[in-house]
Image 1 (cartoon, rainbow, N blue to C red):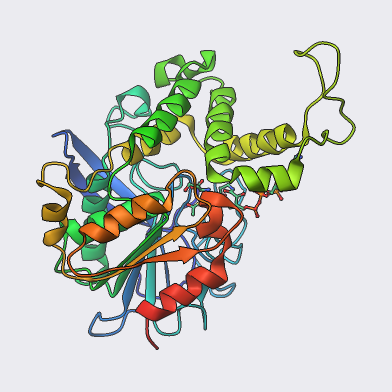
Image 2: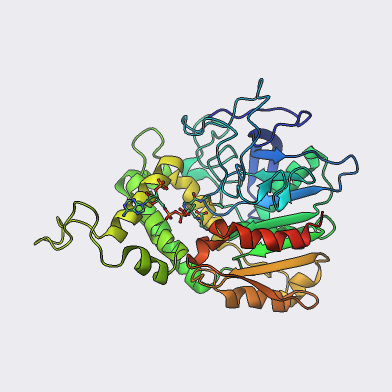
Length: 388
Ligand SMILES: CC(=O)SCCNC(=O)CCNC(=O)[C@H](O)C(C)(C)COP(=O)(O)OP(=O)(O)OC[C@H]1O[C@@H](n2cnc3c(N)ncnc32)[C@H](O)[C@@H]1OP(=O)(O)O
Ligand SMILES: N[C@@H](CCO)C(=O)O
């Protein structure tokens, strides 16, 4: 992996850099040494620091929220995880929303996106080396959403940012944005929480549990200390299949795949164990292979655990009391077909915020992943909180 370590003096849109933020004392009390956050920026920070926007990625996202400029790499080799991403001008996961003239207009706003603490795309995570020069593996501590915010606050300090015009995220990124508004009310002028809730529900915990077990029960998992051998990609792939079903709607799966057979395969074979696949099975298998090629299983467990920690009211009284300390503008939006973070959970959040807030509806056949796919609709919502 190539991560450039520089001060952000020169504008290099969409190029991964690393901030060494020192030791971080986690909520658990664990002191995590030598923490690094990988991050990317787009645009230029105004002299008075008034135009910073923090974009928070979801569970398996990374800092590459949008493509960068294809010029001026110089010493700044683009992020490269096992050679897979060749250049900053490769597409990002919110490409339609961030860029010159886009809803988050990089001609106007200085956009920051950091890989989450505990991840595997440049930030300190379970595959990073511990002080004994061996990977943390099973020794990597539990990271809460609040810990991720604490790490990003250090990054903001390093970048000279003391306020965010907007902190925005979808799904787990929404949880991270919400925690920012509660942990640092003085820094956050507007907060957009999309396809996310105030606290992870029992059902979401249940999905998380099943995904974690899928990884832990892979014989190659080796209790998390597998880095010197084969990686538990089968378990990781199974976790992704479970998760991906929750990311899409039943209606969409029916419309796209129905009961069709995977091309050149026969699902009506005599023996269930050897039969060919249905197309929807082929689709899920593809998602599994793709994730295993770009993600570390321990990091998946870490971010899964981080998501499961999400409860903005934990230790802060009632939900209303927890949110009463916030002082920002709000954008709360839900995807109408989302069965993982259903709109009623966004409504619970909106109702508990100080003041009156509606839940904006993103119409999508695609379920939870609508926050990634319905960019024109998300863009219209964001333009309303980011005036020209
Ligand atoms: C914001 C974040 O934090 S997450 C970062 C971005 N997220 C991800 O990358 C997560 C993984 N992917 C996803 O969540 C989704 O795929 C999205 C939201 C990114 C994109 O969704 P869509 O554009 O609807 O793509 P979709 O889910 O339909 O997948 C299409 C892929 O399935 C493949 N596919 C479809 N049917 C089948 C099948 N029967 N057999 C095999 N492959 C199939 C397609 O060929 C295509 O492959 P490719 O992605 O390698 O080109
Ligand atoms: N596709 C998204 C869904 C979770 O919000 C991800 O993998 O992060």
